[in-house]
Length: 184
Image 1 (cartoon, rainbow, N blue to C red):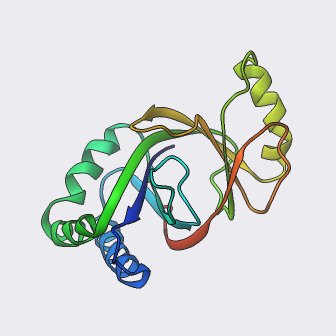
Image 2 (image 1 turned 30 degrees about the horizontal axis):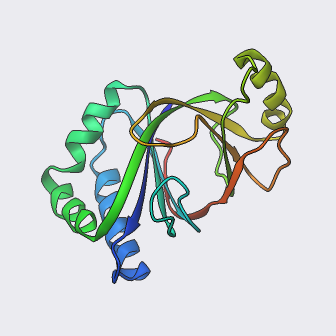
């Protein structure tokens, strides 16, 4: 499973309720279009997005995909037909954004309340890193690993159902679910 993850913040002067309403309408239209390979949608409100300047409260959209071929279908569907107007409305309200492509590396996809963004410690092998994370996976977490980045995002994201103690430094962001659909 892959996830196209998009982080974005509203323009100054745009209220959170107006932004969230437009954002919800776009994702509802996208979900109703049955994009081939789109398995689910997750939208979270975040207290801040550390890798966007300025660091402001914003949103994190997870587009869950079968595979990389689904990216083309998602890209085309987002800006055509019934999705064009809702897309253009929310795009006009957004100030800044960045994205990345992540693959599910360990565990089963979960509905998380916490996300821990981290990098593998310098000098540690990926095998050792995976072993150090395995107790968290056994406790109900899942690990996403970056496949492609379109901005300065961390290499890994550990989704957790509750606050956890990690074996090395990570940036913890609480996820407030705003829109959840799927999996199909």
